[in-house]
Length: 207
Image 1 (cartoon, rainbow, N blue to C red):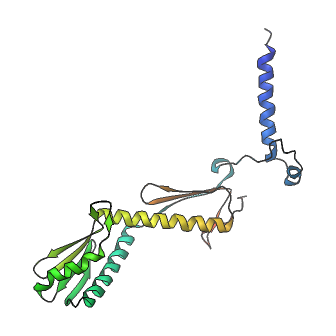
Image 2 (tube, rainbow, N blue to C red; image 1 turned 180 degrees about the horizontal axis):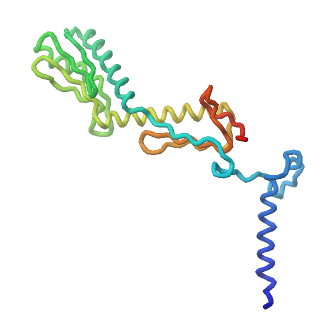
Image 3 (cartoon, rainbow, N blue to C red; image 1 turned 90 degrees about the vertical axis):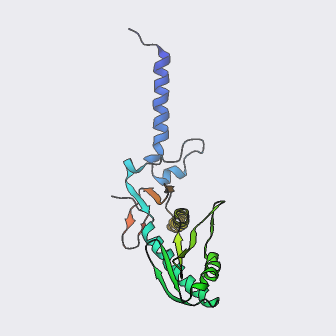
């Protein structure tokens, strides 16, 4: 059975084109500098599966972020009540909020009016902080789920920017830095390894 010359010629053309595009991966840089401009002169970028490298998934610690936010709220509440001349007995920070005990029950409305300024809008109709009465002489500051989600999202965006700046300073080529889900960041760098002493990609290929 005789093969048609057209499929054979097509297969040969595809093979030659593949070899031509693969040549920049095996030729030294000195040869590529003299390579004609109309021919392929860029090496094929190899992924982690062929070249190795670093693949990290970073996660924002939501629990620690909430604790830090509550500590800040407690300090701000003390300052604002002091400046507004609202006497208080104690300001206690818990897992979900800040409990404030006032010296006199008649100061509840005034304390709430002052502390509402600590809340920030989340969307069109929600706040990141609920300021409510607690008993007859107390005020409760409670982080809302929307507020915590906004804090985590803001922390992720800030972390993304910091990672991008540090990677740009190192000069690593073709890194992947992107947000994954609500609280994670994916960092992928083919051909790179992480320096444990500095915690960043060195840009050197693994051997």
